[in-house]
Amino acid sequence: MGTPDFAVETLRLLVERGYNVVAVVTMPDKPAGRGHKIQFSPVKQYALSVGLPILQPERLKDEVFLEELRSYRADLQIVVAFRMLPQVVWDMPPMGTFNLHASLLPQYRGAAPINRAIMNGDKETGITTFFLTHEIDTGKVIQRRSIPIADTDNVGVIHDKLMIMGAEMVCETVDNIIADKVVAIPQEQLMTDEPLRPAPKIHKDTCHLDWTNDVETLYNQVRGLSPYPAAWCEFVAPDGTATGVKVFEAVRHICKHDKQAGSIVTDGSKSIEIACADGYLSLTSLQLAGKKRLSVEELLRGFRLTNEYIAR
Image 1 (cartoon, rainbow, N blue to C red):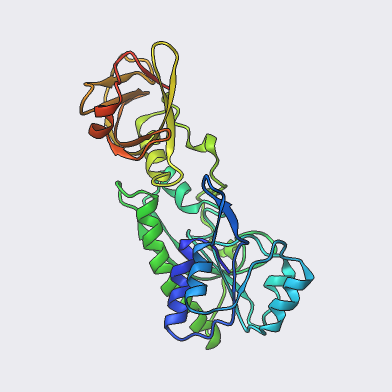
Image 2 (image 1 turned 135 degrees about the horizontal axis):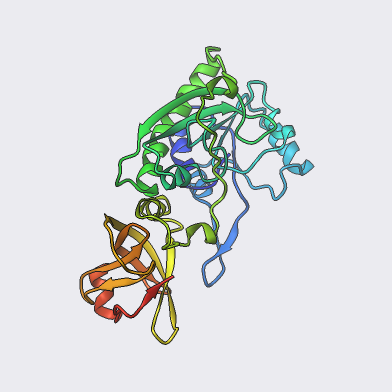
């Protein structure tokens, strides 16, 4: 059960290694883009390419869906990047249902664990497989594995690393469940004195860059939202005209200055620096509203930016 690219790698590995995947459950098709053309999820696209049966329920408690799901008589269900399941679904197979989660549970329960770990400046993250239960992301842990987060890593880099590592760990988890070698650990036993950090869904306001923050906070926010959905702000001209800007990459410079937060310092050709609480954030890859992503030099060739502008 899954929908985005993160789930495809697991499905692909299960298929290629000969596991008996009896069916795939993914989100219903939805219109996308300006033309509202129906677009299949990445999981559905892969499932079609290898001839797997596909279920796309609107409601997970719908009796027609439940009867069809039961008809496959699955021994085990695997969830990767899917929505919350009702008990009638996760309790169906005799060997249970387990989930692959992109954090070291119990830390970062929720929809955006990779984003939140990087935004918080963490130096480590990882993946966890755990059995589903009533409360989201709280079930007994089967396996965990960690990786470091480098100072320059963004969400795209860590996502891809965890996606590959997670697919391998799902196969290991399946093998251990089949061999009856799993000793699942309650998450309470894995808690430390460190406070639990949640991983709520990312919203537009989450992505807005507040230039009164310190450089490190803003730098981590950019990394934690790149390449998607991307941090953003507005460049405001002296006449009040505002242009939306997404920021994908930046370099931090910690220093003292007397500029107002949000002040733009630019040479008009190769650099854009924004003043924040304790230094400057130098923007290196960005995208104007309605345009494509560009390096700062490329953007400044076509957009006249001066020191009279303010970022907000």
